[in-house]
Image (cartoon, rainbow, N blue to C red; front, side, top):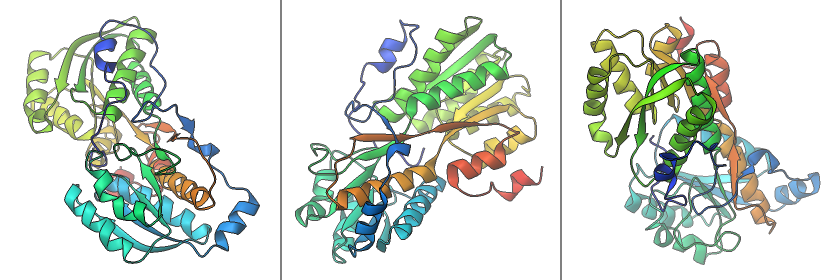
Length: 353
């Protein structure tokens, strides 16, 4: 989960509430409780596109870290900015360091960009980081989160992210399909105040509880510290060898669950997780434990923030929170899934199978 930024949890009671209710998953909401709007609705008229091309606008892409996800978001943004005639004058990678991102903003402001697209490393300190851009009147559009205290429509245009509830629900559906609609599963959730994973995990759990009465969540295990993921995975597999499936909150813990199952000689338990991973996908196409990986359309997020930025440059008002679709990638849909999510073919190791 290299992409994500920590911040205030809009739905702080999600996990607690999920323990007592079998209601359907709540719709995805933004970091501050904003209602979600499909990113496909972010469009420009021909007249607006012509105005953007005539504006001589420039952009800087101030990213939080490097990853497959960031590369895909960046590619989507670059392609759409080029299509709209907005010149990209700078790109930065903060290495998930809030101080570095603050420095990056100062550096790119020397080029006086009209627009900054960015994912804040730390929303708590981000107001100071983006202050130079705000003071210069630079248009700001964010991925996943926004600086604490910033007001949408005044301080920034919008936030574009995933349809988190859709991701969790599709993971639940994939799990049910993988185990034939019945059996016992383990649920490894992110036990931290993190609105992205909290909503995804909650939606998975509620989908199982609400739609699949013959599936029992036999064990629930919180993961607060990713550094403990290996110990948690080993303990879970050792204590519960008869599980039909295990849901893991994102790819890196899922890789450790897979390693633990392999070490135990367990070929029965199926894994479903979120976010693409070559390691997990390779096991999946080889008929191993991994049944499905649910991913977002990361390239589309980049297209969305670029379009929102263009509208912002024209002074147009947009919705406060946009989301892209999710897809469940299986052994039969690896190539299509990689292309829809990351806008590129999967690694060669997956195509050679």
